[in-house]
Length: 158
Image 1 (cartoon, one colour):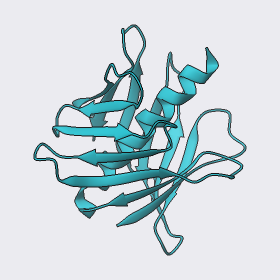
Image 2 (cartoon, rainbow, N blue to C red):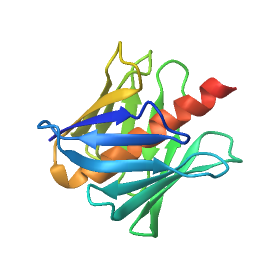
Image 3 (cartoon, rainbow, N blue to C red):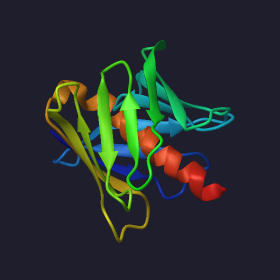
């Protein structure tokens, strides 16, 4: 399954549209006023599916994940020297990025690929392609991509 994750140009808060290969809206992400990033994920009809909320006072960036209003786990950035690395605790996933932080490979506990997240260059807004092995994981891969993008955004504001 392939999804295109594109940030909206004109928006007061972070907001994104996520499309499939045919250009159909699969998810809509709406940023909310909060300390740190707070991103609500809805389906195409507007029904809330999940949320990614940044924890503010932490040594390394950390994001709490919610599905249908219930806390399911977190994504945290790991301490590394050259290439970024993240862990999604409730799935046992690990993600490693390249040196430029444009491309990430997400793997499960066994080391099998779950998804590849790639940034498209020369775009007006942040745009990522999410290549997902199992379509049932689409929401969780999107949560990871949102946390990764929010972490980069928070760091660039410093």
